Length: 209
Image (tube, rainbow, N blue to C red; front, top):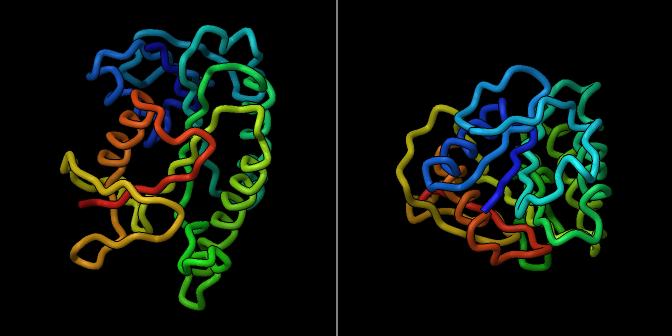
């Protein structure tokens, strides 16, 4: 299986590459600068300069784009749209690193995590940007996409337990009442979805077991 990881030098992207390589997948890192991942192949190019030809022949493309500065937040929608446009009508699957703020907290799916009064104000612009990107992605019936939201507490330095709970559109707690997952366990879930492809045109979520 041939996998391209876009923005592979980021924290999540690096771990997804590592997990995929260790499972024997043929991984290409798409990076703007020098490759700092375990990938055996490299496309050194800005995300917005990628063309359909660059991603030809891949079974899966992972979108690991991340932006946090206020002036960069529109990039979540713009980058995802660009990848969707160049993968439009292709069999290549697009698996997206998403956010937790857009997860629902009621069965009717009318209230999101980021709508709550206790949601940290400093994270609200990011949550809204990622939520808008997901909303626009849902309109793309021409792309074989999957959007994976982490748990609410997404820990960069968290331990790799090797286990996780696969959930859906709603914020899910584990048996200890936690919404938490490490980047490392998220990468495991991501590569599981890459290899199985069970959730086409769906948003799923993951939480530590």
